[in-house]
Length: 279
Image 1 (cartoon, helix red, strand yellow):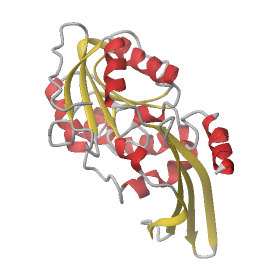
Image 2: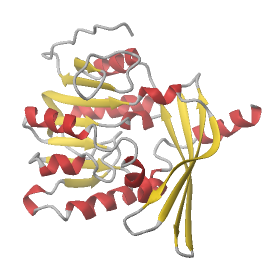
Image 3: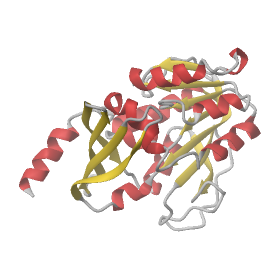
């Protein structure tokens, strides 16, 4: 165990953005076999009701961004990873010019947009859990509030089950083919620092096509915060929680839910949600 804790310390010193550049070629392949598109319709409905310019934080390869754009939303996607954005831009070029989203490389802790530029800001699929440091988390919430119009909506999607995963050594988790015919194998290990709420995925992707073999190794680190802490930080940043949901169909939040969705409004005028379940 002492060796494992030492390894955790080495990983913790890295920024939460580490590993995503290396993940880019395999992100869509893996997510098509795991999360898929089950959250896309939810965010599309949320954005459709707001009818306002949208900013997606951590848009990656465009998994959520592009369906929003196809539905007619005026949407901007931002991500720190240039390789991830290269995939998003390539896909955006297939859309009619009038439906193409703006795609910007930037840091969610220091957004390159003016005050009150958007009516909706989204942080889907655990994006904020890549902010390991509390100062980074606070900065990202402050920036989301700054670029939102008064009364604008902030949508946050968290993956709380990460903290409950059992640790395991390297094992094959997924195997399948790409449209190109190449075979991809994901070998993965999981480590936990439960005291600090950190979950570390050590990933190895092996891609074989004929006699050519390509391997990518990297680690992704996520931090799971309690709902009480998330709500508290949102309120400190100037938000009022409007809804806490436990799935993408609108069920009320419960701490045992596999998905935690928070919808909050910027400004004092927003009505605070009635939280039915204890933290």
